[in-house]
Length: 345
Ligand code: TXA
Ligand code: MG
Image 1 (cartoon, protein in one colour):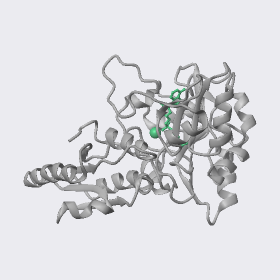
Image 2 (cartoon, protein in one colour; image 1 turned 180 degrees about the vertical axis):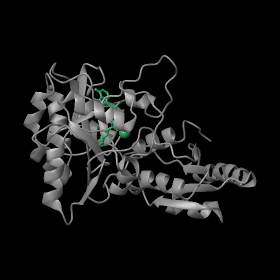
Image 3 (cartoon, rainbow, N blue to C red; image 1 turned 90 degrees about the horizontal axis):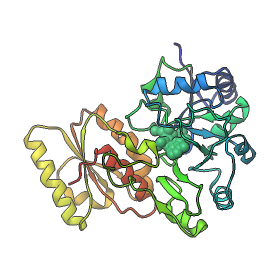
Image 4 (cartoon, protein in one colour; image 1 turned 30 degrees about the vertical axis):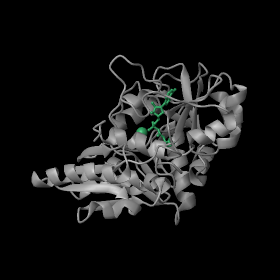
């Protein structure tokens, strides 16, 4: 299949028109959002939605997020919007916030992975909103990566995974947030964060008065334990390198643990790198370091592309320096733990 790539800086109208037509015709489109790039299709066209799962190699019981551009579109998808849910959505939409609500029967089981609920998001990215609007459809879109790989934060990442496999990719530059949206179950009185993201638990609490974090966000679910969000069960964000995460303990002591494992890996002849913050660089001496940023926001924005770059450099071992789970730090740690396959040091 020929893949048409449009740079929206120079081919805004042509790109959006071609992409909107592809969506309306039941085809797949790679497009930018403020979180990560999405792989979109007409949410109400079950055949088109099925082709998303096929293209990604995604398990069919891991449901997709349906993207809308205006509030009224929510009515077509969900059977009711509780008062507290509406309050949160009025604050955090458009933005990196996904609501899980009871679905209408018209929403097909392929999009919802067989669940009675559906996940809905109104992205803030102007081009994503324009694509939804021009297509005249509700757009189901997971992150535009092959299942298991780090999510795409640039059009090049989408090209790397889907060139020749989908008809259209829109290039809207680098994603702002860099991590996927906060997925939040808004059916009950207390919102439950199923997957942390750019809208933080603290922000949700400040509006709703209370918030719960689902088990499985930072812990590995034991066999038989039920994930509230199916996506939390799967191996994720895994580069080819073996990844370890250092968490807990005082800064110098944590760096000490990283250094011991790094030195051991180097002795074994394995190409190793430490992913750390700028402020703690000096704790690692002459060892190979990648600086992810000055704060949790910058780390969030660079994490996925750094994991892809590590693969390109042929890195065999990545050692993450863990950070505080305050604010967006919770989302960063959630992704790091999964990239590390729960291998903590
Ligand atoms: O930022 C984002 O959310 C991006 C962009 C493209 O919008 N999309 C994204 O989609 O990250 P995806 O498919 O990679 O992740 C969707 C997550 C999965 O963990 C899935 O299990 C969960 O949302 N999810 C979807 N529907 C759900 C539902 N009804 N109940 C619980 N979890 C659900
Ligand atoms: Mg994903």
